[in-house]
Image (tube, rainbow, N blue to C red):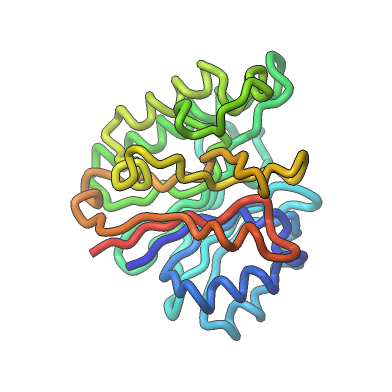
Length: 256
């Protein structure tokens, strides 16, 4: 079973790129982020024609998350992260696909920091850890897939000082990610590629793609019930170089 995460950065604008990748990669489940579309604008007919069913939660202009499943109907479990009834941002969705739970996470960016946006990022992270702990306790096979907006370690960002004040690499952000991992989750990409950068994001500015000035922001975390099934993991980085591409590339795992 192949599970992927892809921050598509506007699902309708990038739809040809996304459909092309789906045909080539044939993932069984895909977590999408940054739909930048309302529920009604989500291109479900195009996905169904390509052989995928979906659950989604859209939001006008920004955010938005979805889970695609090839050849089966994903069973929606929840479309919001528990713990804050007044949080109306579309950043979390969770579904059962082929016997496992798959999430799509779009964690807050947190910039500028310090400030309320960074506080929101850390509070959201805390809510995610609280929810994720329930999966561990119940021994459920789960892939926590998504754009975490964190480069967890120096290896996960190209050599530079230009991001030093960015929320993506602050000690508090990295500590929050580490605290999640320490619950017992396996960072699939890093598990199988311990010494390679494995970037998933290259900003449009300053020729960062052509310079390979990337960051690893998109992660697939496996619960202890699922980690023994890990066979392969990677990043389809060539997708980032296509015309009209998202600034992210798909990351994926293959499970027994």
